[in-house]
Image (cartoon, rainbow, N blue to C red; front, side, top):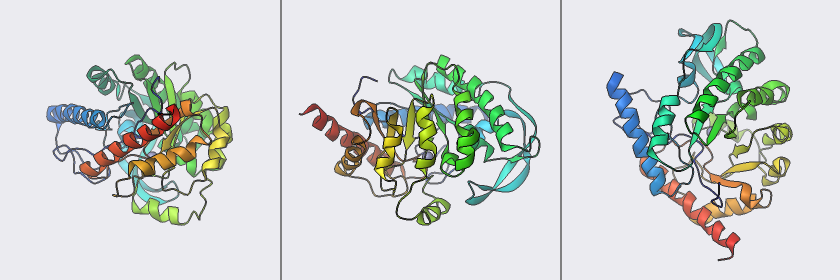
Length: 343
Ligand SMILES: [Zn+2]
């Protein structure tokens, strides 16, 4: 990236109400068949245009092409039965009815590559594509076949690597793996989580990112955050190994969070997508509030490695609020660019 402080979003953006019920996480599609395929493309173009109007530098599909950041990918795999559902605790936090792994998992064909090609056709700007990370995928399933979270994660890592290589060939500039589970299962992260992530990026020449957050602004997550005390030190657990890993960019929740900024020192040398927009609040940040968070991060992240971003996805927010937040992100980044360039 030649742009100083290139802005991007962590993931999802609101869907139009003709595609899926707005202001709701993981809402069902309102269309079917060919109409759904065309509707997703229309929504992708709209979301792209919204990002461009707000001045976002690294753009995405706004996750208009998927219902859920993990299960939409898993739906395309062999070995997972969506009819046989079990209730599991996701990230040790909330119950969810999830599909069951009933046999060896494999990918029949690419999942998002056609969507990524479509996005690539629409813009010359750098594009980022999100995939679920292996550990977070494992945590969103009931495994009746491998009976080992680690074994299943390795299988997913191989599948993700196949998909990532095709996304790279389709012209994706940054492939991001969403790993909120990295903030919960610390022993597993260090035992095999980061190794599986490195397997997923093996041989890629495009840039790679891992997004680790405290989740969407849903009640289970906000309740959990209340139990974390005044200092959130979860990132401290995974950072030393991540710093040593081949991942290029680490995407983090920083704004309005209780993450001590000095933890970023542990990943010095990595590019950091600094979350400077709170996705759990309808209050639109002022550009100065965004700038303040970026300024704090700059003490621990070199300016050429700082990527202003949102804390997490914005799918559950109203469109006008999400748009206001994107504009605030751009304006806040611009304040800091001017400061850095001494203008
Ligand atoms: Zn997130």
